Length: 228
Image (cartoon, rainbow, N blue to C red):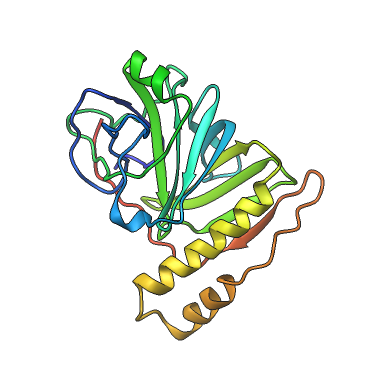
C-alpha cells in the first residue's frame, strides 16, 4: 500500500477523479480549490512559510513531502488544508497520476493563486477532521496535526504567521469535536464525553522548546491502496 502524506502537486487544466483524499482545484478566480457543502460558512484563512509531512514510525521521523515558499491555508467546518505554488522537486506524492486516489475539494483563497495558475501547477492538500488524532502547537509559530495512514502514524507540521499557533490549535480542537459529535451520534459514551469536553477546550500551554498537545481518540485511519 502507498501511504497518504496529505500534500500533492496538481495541474489547473487537468481533470481528477472525485474522491475524499485530496482537494479538487477550483475554476473560480478567487479560489485555489473547490468548496464542498460540509465546509460550511465559518471559514478562516491563514498564511505561513512552509508545510511538511512527517512519517513518525520508528525512532527517527522521515520527511515525506514539503512546500517551499509561502503557504496559504484554510480552516472550515470539516477540514484544514494548505496550498503552495512552490514545492521541492521530490515532494509530489508517488500516487499522483491517472491511477491515483484523489479527493473532493475545499475552499482556500490565496495570494499565490494567480502566479500558481500561470505556472499551471500548485501543491495542495487537506486533513479531514475525522482523521485527526493529535493537535499540537509550539509557542506562537508551529502547528502539528497527527493522523494515521495505513497503520503508520504521520503528521503535517506548519509554520504559521502571526504567532497564532496556540489559537489555531484550540480552534481546530473545538472544530474536530463539534464535527465528530455531529457526524457520529452513536459514539461510545466515553468517547462522546471526551469530545463534549474538547468542544470547550482551553488553550494549550507550550513552553520554550517544548510543544503541548490535544490527544484526540477515535480518529479514522486513512486507507489507500494505490501503487506508484
